[in-house]
Image (cartoon, rainbow, N blue to C red; front, side):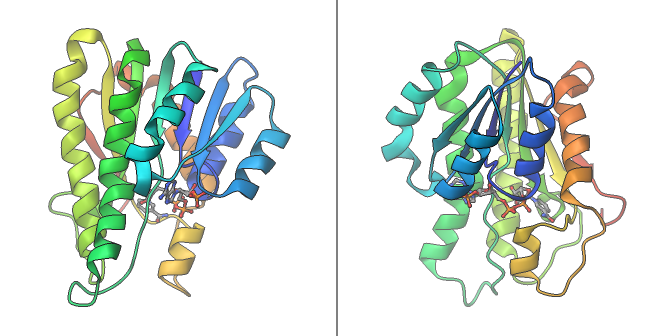
Length: 229
Ligand SMILES: NC(=O)c1ccc[n+]([C@@H]2O[C@H](COP(=O)([O-])OP(=O)(O)OC[C@H]3O[C@@H](n4cnc5c(N)ncnc54)[C@H](OP(=O)(O)O)[C@@H]3O)[C@@H](O)[C@H]2O)c1
């Protein structure tokens, strides 16, 4: 399988990379901004290409991203849009720059990556967008997460729209609205909070879903949490 983990340098994404790498028939492209983390991934795994990418500056970087993808893949079987930015600040306090960075990282960037990769998807390809319970309609909402939750709702809705546009090509698009996972993101945004799920556990679920979920779901926004909705 040719797999792209967009945002695989830390947290759940890094665990996804580790799990997919256990199958030596998989070829992986991993993106992120952190050069040190990217280099350590490329040193640790065969069949893995790293592409440094900042989703807040995607339009400028997209020609290089495309040519680097083309140098390694002629098709993409699985794309997981994992990258995300959470800034925990009240709506009244968040700056325009911070709000735009959230929307670029969580919505415009992943959307543009899908657009760039569209010619690489084939019948049977599976695109998975990672949203949050905060962006799931009807789920509990939390103070400080207005733009984050809105960005996650946007990528969830885009999922439904793209599934409609792509279904004639046999390309599936699903969205996982995941609950709290104990990652660096959560530790930085909510110091002291302990999430009930570990990154490895969530990555195991997402890996399995990426491989087989498109047999049963297309255009779906699935809550992946035992509480909250
Ligand atoms: N952890 C949770 O409780 C939770 C709950 C619901 C949803 N989620 C979602 O799950 C996904 C993964 O979360 P996580 O907790 O594993 O987060 P994390 O530990 O902060 O990892 C985020 C990943 O996104 C990448 N990234 C961030 N900003 C980027 C940018 N501007 N350009 C390119 N890559 C960027 C990071 O790479 P670099 O730093 O190298 O750029 C990193 O690989 C996110 O979409 C998050 O919103 C998480």
